[in-house]
Amino acid sequence: MKILAIQNRMGIGDMVIFLPFIEAISENFNSPITLLVKESSKAKEYLYNNSKIKQIIDLNRGNKKNGHHDGIFGFFRLAKELRNHSFDKVFIFNSSLRYNLICKLAGINEIYQYPLFKKKKQNIIEAAKSLLLNKLNIKVKSNPKIFIEEDLMQKAKVEFDINDNKLNILLGIGGSGPTKRIPAYKFIEFIKLSLNEYDCKFFLATGQDPEEQKILKEIISSYKEKCVSLDKLSISETLPIIKNCRLAVCNDSSFSHFSASLGLPTIVLMSDTPLLYGSYSPQMHPILPEGSQTVLHGTNGKEKINPKNIFDKLKNIIT
Image 1 (cartoon, rainbow, N blue to C red):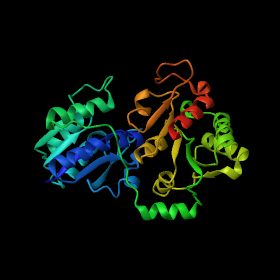
Image 2: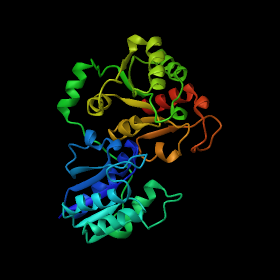
Image 3: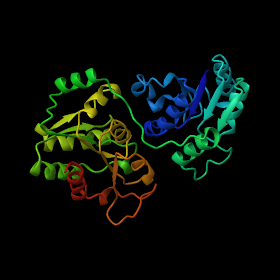
């Protein structure tokens, strides 16, 4: 049986969130799944060893509507490409009529999809849960997991001198936008509080954005001997290092999703994104801006994240 799952959101976190639902489909039909996802999800770098995923196909749609699968010509290109795979079933994790019609044109007989034209205010997790419950009578828990081979973990431990007797902490200091990036001085204060009580080593994960690099350099300059930068590594190189850590403190970023899915207790600093993205996993422990009961797009609360609250949460987790 050939089964396709279409997940057209662009983020890494979005892809991680959908993992339990895709795996549940595979288990239900006892068949690995082919994914159609955007390259920006980076799925090939962390799902290559997932036995429930057979193949990953790139969905090439650009922000400027100039992707290979954009427009009317892209519509027919994608339908033709999917037809060549002869899929029996498809699960479409969106409410788009476009993908519904593409799959029909591709000759896929069984199409399972969210209700059409219902995207507004759609809960990313509840919509997926409803699809599988209504169509397959499956209840799925939101607890994504990514697997790392033991030999890769041991290799990373040796290469980066990771000592299990220390409190190894991932700091996910990057973020997809400036409002999600907690200022360097708050991480520095958290590091100071942690070192006062524990023998710690910090692994700093971020991207190459100039503002992220500025935060990285500020932290490194303050605690050079206690910090290791991971910004030059690929995702696949970084994951075994994360897995060797005891816990993580991350902005709402790809690293918070990775660390939680790797089984690490993850303190998520929620400054400007719906709380859902920092609380969907049982491994996630959100920290909100002081005085806030929740957080949404537009909260702009990064200056109100209290390092003492982060440290108190850390102590609560490890004791």
